[in-house]
Image (tube, rainbow, N blue to C red; front, side, top):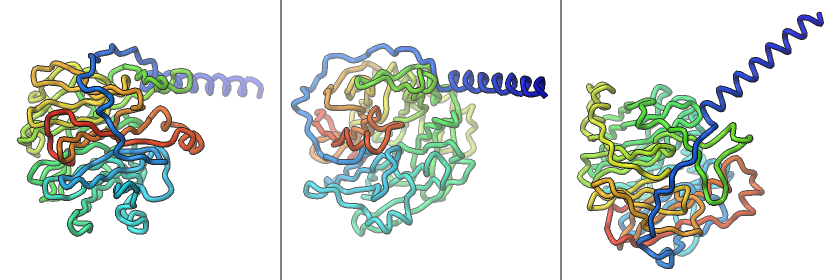
Length: 378
C-alpha cells in the first residue's frame, strides 16, 4: 500500500510540474519591451476629464452629435447597469437596468456607426455564456439588431471585445483576443446576411509574442511571473474609405493591415488572406486603436500612459503622455475634433477585489484634440 501511495504522489507531482510548465510557457516568462515613445506633441494640460466614474471604465464611443456612451469593465464584475450614457455630468443607464438584464452578460466593446446606431459587443464571460452583438438606434433608442454567435465563431475561451463598422453599416470586424484559450482571431459579421466568419485563427499576426507588459503602476504579472497578460489581437482601426483593416495584438511588436475585400469574401481561404497581409511598422504594446482622415493610426501605449500615432510610412510619434492615465484602453473620435480615451486602469482592476477597485476610484474617460479628425464613434 505504501508503494502505491508513493507512486500516486510521484504521479501527481509530475502532473503538477507539467501543468506549471505549460502555464509558464503559455502565460509567463515575458521579456522587457523597448520604449518607443518620443517627446509628446501635445502638452498634458490639453487633456481633460470627460467622464468621472466610481466604477472601472470599459470602452467608450461618442456619436457625431456628441452623445457619449461607455461600459463598466466586465473584469470588475459589475452588479448594476453595465452600459451608461454620460448626460449633463451624470451617468444614466442606457437602456434601463431591466432591459440590460435581458440583453447583456458582460458587454464591453462599443462603436457608433454612420447610421447613428450604437453597437455593443458582449463576450459573455470569455464565451462561457452566449456572446452577442446588439445595436440601438440612437434616434428611437430601441434595439434594431441582435445576433448571438455560435460556438464555432466564439468558442469557450474567446473574448470578443473590440469592433469596427464599415461606413455603409454592413460589415463589422471584431477582435477576439482569445486570452485563456490562446485562439485569437478576427470575426467578420455581415449585418445584411446575418452571417459570421472567423478569420486568421491563431495566425502569427494576431497571436501574442513573449513580451511582459511593464505598466507604470505595476508589471502585469501574477503568481511570481507564472501568469502574465499575454493578449492576442486587440486594437482595430478601419480606414475611412473602408478598404483596409488595421490590427495589432497587444503583446506584439507589429501593426498590420489587410484588405477588407479579402476578409469579406467567404470563398477566400486563410492562406489567401495571409498573403494579403501587410506589416506597417513597429508599434508599442497596445490596447485600442483609431484612425483619422490621413490614415494616421492612433495607438494606445499601455506601458507609458500615452497615445501614439503611426503615419503611413510607419514612423511613430507620441501624441500625448500623462501620468494620470493608468491604462489607455479604447479610443473614439467625437465631434469638434475631440479624441476620447477610456482609461480602464487595468493594473488596479485585473484579478483585484471589489474593495481594491473602490479604493482606487474614481476612474476616467479623458479627451483631447489631436489636430486631425476621424470618424465619430470609432
